[in-house]
View 1 (cartoon, rainbow, N blue to C red):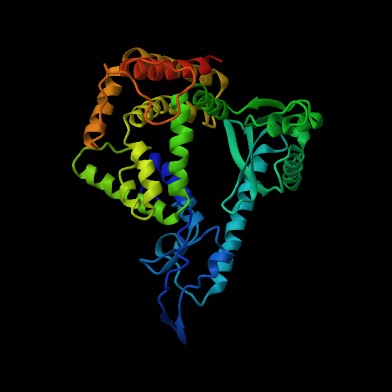
View 2 (view 1 turned 120 degrees about the vertical axis):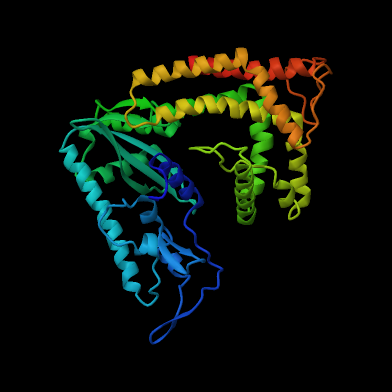
Length: 433
């Protein structure tokens, strides 16, 4: 991790976490002599330590996924599980000891947080999500003020049997008690907008407010921005078509097969290398992520009928236009999204960022049509996608006739007024609210 620039490390960590530990369970692990007999990596170890253990086929070595991502380069301790790799297949005790070390670090981190808190007040932030095994997990963070700044730290992740408000409340209370904390110290709550979290009758916020009236609730800013995107897709038929009828089937098709996902990653990585070598692609944080669709025609060989149907839609001008518009808009709103998730953010700065976002969206609406069309035409030329005559009458390309759409309008009117201006106006209205 130390090889990456400090500004890029969080992005690299998130990318690795999404890929999950490398655990080639069908690999034929090579044997080598470790006196008095030959030994090799045991695939069953993935079942025991699957949350952190990973294996390099190239180096025939085991590594700690957690230590690689988060171990400070100057921290005490060896690098057997980070740089050099672990290969002493006869020393199972070392693997077990490493788990003692990880747990000890977690406890020491929690201890340090509680020492700084020193019995003071804090806010709780919580969110729940099903893990890869479909078990519901809830993450709980503490937000508090020390002598110098506002701090946010993960307190723990707990398994919950269901996501009812009472179950979540009991889980949070148990975790607090185990850390010698209580609801009486809570002065703030931050969750998403789901009814089980912020419902006024039996939501989690209400249950905690009954325990501590001072626990003021604030709807998570990042989730509020997400809701504007959801509302946008519901209000505009073209956006709804993009997300529901196009991207959802595409993600399901690729996501349901590990082989397809890995194939797409390899093709995208090679494409990035190729264009970088030609100087056609800019490098930097957040760029060149997995969003290439050009390799789907090769994936189609494995599931031809379904893939060819998806590719047919991806090659329409409608899809290219709406997709480019949404990417352009999200590039603007993403700055606000990132700002809202900073640990030192406050309401004044948040509102200022909202105003900046609105200004940039308004500028896109007033002056961005030509530059957007230039990008789209360049894309359609590169991938040989048919460009529509903007003066011709717009025809819905094989999909259901959208309710409320005017008949007989030109392609220019449809894409510029009914899509471009309409979508941006809806986004501006949601930000106003």
